[in-house]
Length: 293
Image 1 (spheres, rainbow, N blue to C red):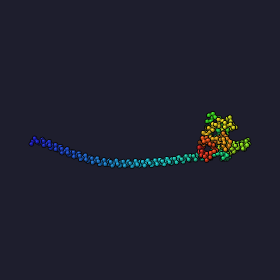
Image 2 (image 1 turned 30 degrees about the vertical axis):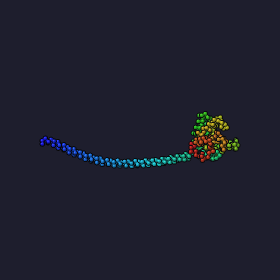
Image 3 (image 1 turned 90 degrees about the vertical axis):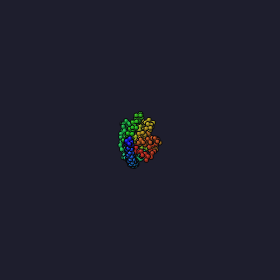
Image 4 (image 1 turned 90 degrees about the horizontal axis):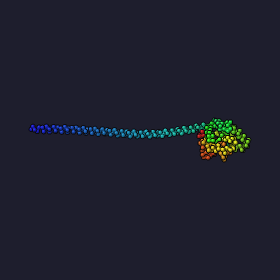
């Protein structure tokens, strides 16, 4: 009996150990089940939260898109308002400029429109004596025209062209006296071919000059044959001047010396298209008044 006692003890110990291990296994298995259940529950909660966040994010993106669309719409509206304001401002500027520009300056006066004895240019500037023939004579030009005329004379001089001014602004009274002297000298019929009556002269506007050279002087006869005339034909438009009475015009005899300021844009159109100022409709001419200076 005694020799079986150790075996019994070992067997009982082994059974106890097995029982303990079984208990521990079941406890761990139960804990694992509970942990899995908790994890599953937590996963569901996280999944719900993620779904909720995704929904909120989608709504936020949609709202952001709507806000961007609204912002773009407002920007388009604002741009439209800005363009309208710019257009209105531009029109106001044009109207303001037109209101300050003498409409008479682009009228077709030679035998068409009439300037009365009370008309005087808004402001006159004395032409520098170095450009006047003879130099002891005083000649005036419309103040706003002078910068263009001076640039023309300066460029002509620097390129070796002998170009001088023999006549510029003439008042109503001066034109009347001049026309009377021409009638007395040449007869009324001849005088009417090259000289305007008072009130019909472009010189009264203060925008017109008669050119000459030191060789031609006051006679005008040979001005057409000078380099100065050729230079004016090629370049005067760049400074806003055009030949008032070219060959075959229906107003006066050909006057190669007589040039009128009409603005750079209109003068360039006349030069480029090879047309004449007096052949244009007055309504067409009036469109260039705002760009006169």
